[in-house]
Image (cartoon, rainbow, N blue to C red; front, top):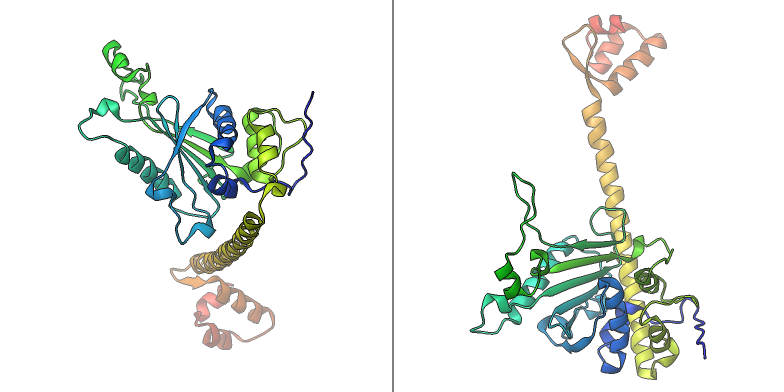
Length: 314
């Protein structure tokens, strides 16, 4: 029997709330496995969701600082973070998060080759960095300064690290800029980003885990207690968004105004033609208008502090 999903915008829970409240349950692993499989282009199986200091309840949960630490069947550690609050230092926060996970999960007495691979996935709802795409992937490579070749692992090192690429040893970063998505879902991961942005799923979506997301993330599936928590979350999120956007617009307007003032200050000082004196453009314009209106040269000079000689040259 063919299952048809009929979901309209607004009928699904926001993913950034669901990942904190609902997707930690083992019964819902299939949703995260679907998303991770589409993003990483691999068949991801979640072993467990780990607890850490970063995903404990904190006073700023209402601002939705979310960390989920997942261990997959390969022994890799995957950080999934949804961030709605605009942060200028977020790129360094990503770096700190991966470093902390590496240190926290390194067993004493083990060699460095036992350090677990970390993948940092960041779903952000604000403009991060400057770029035209909506999904970015970052790895570490060593490039020769002179030969421009990429440093690779020796056969012995490949056996130690169980990979052929140095980039596969170090942490990898993914940035999904939700608000920059153009709504055109072509691939499986596009369908997931569409869900992140619109809290909706189209009937023709076929990405791995997307059907399960449609069923389990329905607002109708919430208990009365969860519904209250979710409504409060939405209210807090809207208040924060309004506050952030308001401050951003005010700051931009103030900066624009200051920029105009500075530009005028720099631009109005010019060197007068055929003289060694720099005069203010605005004052020069006033002097010009006064002369055209028949004001005598002496009065213009006393008013503008421009020499009579320069006024006669206007």
